[in-house]
Image (cartoon, rainbow, N blue to C red; front, side, top):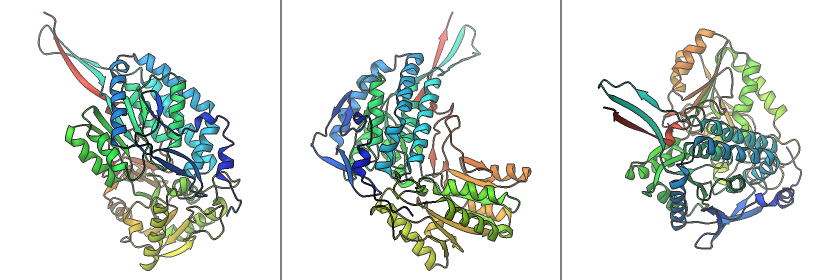
Length: 502
């Protein structure tokens, strides 16, 4: 446990380029306050110190942002893929050049360890790079016509203004993965970052402006929890908006999708997960344990693809629990993300902390045993939203920890005895974002990978995401794919031009 006292404001002062710490929203190429002149504080979840404030905007401000994006779209849609590619490349270079400041800012508002924050900045930059290249590849088709003298041309055109709503757990990468694709396709955007973590989005916006991306192409509106429903409603129902892209919970995704349906908008929904992590009897135990450590406790378990339900074959159950628990004790140190030695930071919100604590209590009441952790640390840096990395055994299939996405540093380990049984239990969830399993049997690898009802599978690895592969889920984990060569598809309309040449 890291007990070193950290001053959030002192750490904020270490950011070299102070202009990256923005306290206004960005609409139509101008830094602006809310029409109401109201603001919300941004708080370091590790110390609960206020590190800044941003405008608390409402629906009237969103209307201005949508209008700015609509005006910009009139010219942006006519730029060539090459022109958009060059501008995205300039944005990429600026993000990479400022990675240290961006990572420090992210740690202060999000809590994740600095090493993870630097990793996220690199991950964020990879999507700008990828879509800077894909901007030149919006290919169409020529379809052979059965009618003499006729030619059928298929072309792709940008959908228009896109509303983008992002979560707090990856405050930079969720911006670039969506905005990069939208801009590459020729769309303009209105972004609403999470109210807990708006500073990373605004810093990216500052760099986009420096890169020469025209006014109105990117707009960022910030708001409080109180104003979020009204802001979201305007972003999803405005007739000028033609697409909505959202990353967040399934419940909110369903709400936004319903609102967007009133004007038949295109939607991309990257929603909640409840990932199974399966260790078969023939698995490499040390490899599986090491991968689970990263897959479960990265970002304090606050990722949508985090391993949530760990199923271990009865024949290797005790061996695996022992190996994994030893790794947790050895590798994980809880503390402020800017303290040396910290590998796991705080929960980002108090509601998240309370949920984790309640899930442990309910699991124990139903017969589970806490092997490690299970409570808020007694000694920790500051007074933030910390919870110990926790390992539980003998967990029931009927408790919330099993049935819901935890989004925290809880690791319940379940026994199973057959492949059919574990596939059935893994697929019992209503969501299907990611799944993982470990086995040395090649036939089983293909069999299980095809049987798991998820959008992404990690076979003998806990790492599944990078810029060149499609990210997304099935069932109630949403629709659409981000990243990869498929990533621009949801931002493009397909148009047929049937031409008679006689």
